[in-house]
Image (cartoon, rainbow, N blue to C red; front, side, top):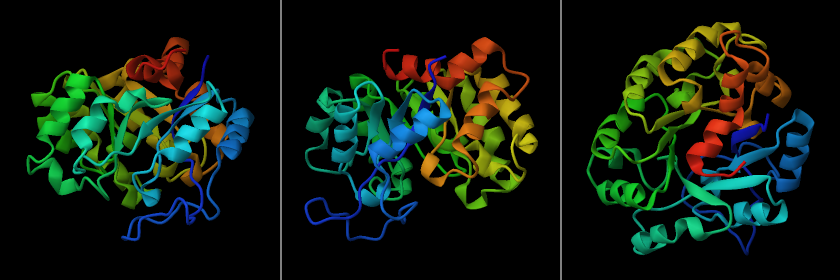
Length: 278
C-alpha cells in the first residue's frame, strides 16, 4: 500500500528575503517553521510514503518553499498551491499553473484572497470556468459550510473539488458539534467530481484513539462517497495525537473498510484524482 498524506504544511520562518504578509492572517501552527526534512522524518516514522504540501495562509501566496521541497525530495511531495484569483495576472498564470514542479492544483482557504463572500457574489465565476477548462483541481477549506459548493458543482460538473477536513467547523474541534454539517456534506455526493479529505480526523473526536465516537459519521461519509472519493490526510502540524495513530485509524481501524477500500483511501484515490502517478 502506497500511503499518501493528502495534507501537510511546510514553511519557513518570516525572513527579509521571503517575508510574510503584513496584513493579519491566522497564526503559524508552531514556532520555528516545519521543514521538508522534518516532514520526511515524520513520514518515514509513520510509514507514509509521500504527501501533498498545501502552503499555509500565513506565508501569503508564495509557493517557493513547497517547490523547493519537491525538488529536494523527488517523489516524496506534490503541491496544491496558493493562488490569488483577484491578481491582475491571474488568468495567464492559471494557464501555466501545472507547469511548475510538483504542482497538481490549487488550495483555497477563504481567510485571505479570495474571501468567503466571493463564493456568493459571482466574482469567481471566471476562475471556476478556467479551472474546469484547464483541469486544475481545487481543494477548499469551508469550515462547516459545505453547501457553498453546491451551485459551483452544478454549474461546473467537470471541475474537481476536494473538501478539506470533511468541511467540518474547526471552531468546534474536540466536540461532536463539529460534525453538525455532515448531512449537508453528504448531499454533495450526488456530484461525482466532489471529493472529501478525511483529514485531521482525531481533531474532531472527543475520545482517544481509536476515536470510536466519530466512527458512525465516517461510516456515513463512506456510504455516500465510497472509498474512491475519500482521501486520508493528517495536517500533521496541528494534529491531535500521534501521526501513527492517525494513519492506523484508516489502515487498521474502521471495521467497515475492506483491504481494497483502505488502499484507495490511503492514497490511490488521491493519486488517481490529482494525476500523481503511483
